[in-house]
Image (cartoon, rainbow, N blue to C red; front, side):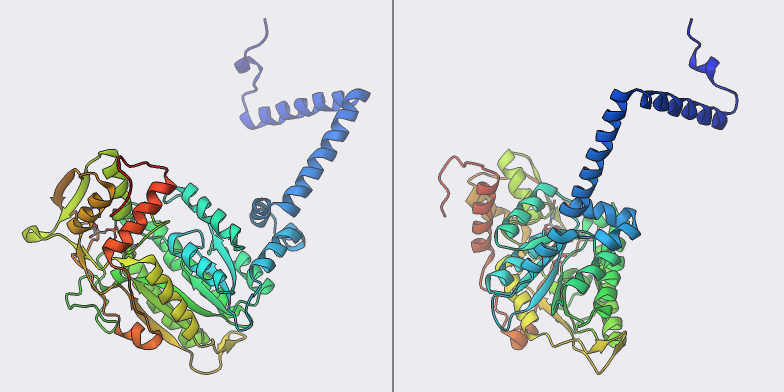
Length: 440
Ligand SMILES: O=C(O)[C@H]1O[C@H](OP(=O)(O)OP(=O)(O)OC[C@H]2O[C@@H](n3ccc(=O)[nH]c3=O)[C@H](O)[C@@H]2O)[C@H](O)[C@@H](O)[C@@H]1O
């Protein structure tokens, strides 16, 4: 009878492992003695070697693997020729006075739209995105395909990867960075607080460090949030209003980002513009946001939660259509002054700005639902409930006069028009036929 595993194992586990593994190697060595096996092993090694070479030199994901597994190999092969060529091609300018822009979070909602708009007008654009699974990554991959069709290459990587950022800045002299990579969402901060610190604080600092060290230093435009106004009751919200009462960790990390921006501007001369976005919506949007998840649930006949604040008052948001936000981003980029630092020190005062980018007309959430019902031709099943204490604020309302006077920001899409475009996109993207043909 064959000895049981128990029987054959010595009492010292470690020793047993060594013995077992050495007898395994003994068996392998014996096989080498047969000429047929020798051939097999030789060609296996050749094949594996070739595959290894191909992964490192051709595939960006292979490069990413290498980047995290061997700094020596990375120095020699990181990026490979094809990777670099794709980045250089993507950064290529099609107009004389164009910008060369690194867009972080390029496969995100706002990142995709901004990247496309820049590319369309002839700027050089390189994206970076970590394609995390906060929401359906296949939507991010679809956005990536859209970008690639328009000549925008998206580097797969994280803004916390200082070595990758340094490599990108040494490869391309970016004139501007649009920093949109972030952990978004107000309520998710209670579920996964660490992800907000990782992306919105640590990631921001890593990016600023890379920008500070870059030569030339780029000017930075980045996404702050209307949520920094927190419990502020003064309306409409102006950039000069207090922002020291964040209602969520998300808001607190965005507010911290604004303070960190001040520091990097002050010490290193980075030109930095923070944009306080007000509940951005539209085609290719974020599935975690209410207008998007409501659409999905209404179409499936599932109930939607409608939050109600004290005294039965529904929350209201200054919903802002994506095209208006893109115009605000481009306006900020075009009016951004150069950073003044070099070699880790500033040479003169640099620009530091904050702008509200809103729509200036808050809409109560039930009204948003009515508009969706009209376009979807389905009645929502509403589950009206007390607003959970998870970071929501009762209303937002932007005063946009600062952005208007600085770069002519002028939102033109109202919620009804914007949702119409969103629904049209949604039905096409998810291939959802409506009973009746889609029209107003
Ligand atoms: O502009 C901003 O600062 C923020 O806008 C949105 O945050 P939020 O306004 O909370 O957007 P949604 O999550 O889409 O919620 C919109 C409204 O619907 C309400 N809501 C949400 C979810 C739900 O199930 N029911 C419901 O009534 C919320 O209370 C809120 O008033 C984004 O998710 C944030 O990333 C962004 O920074």
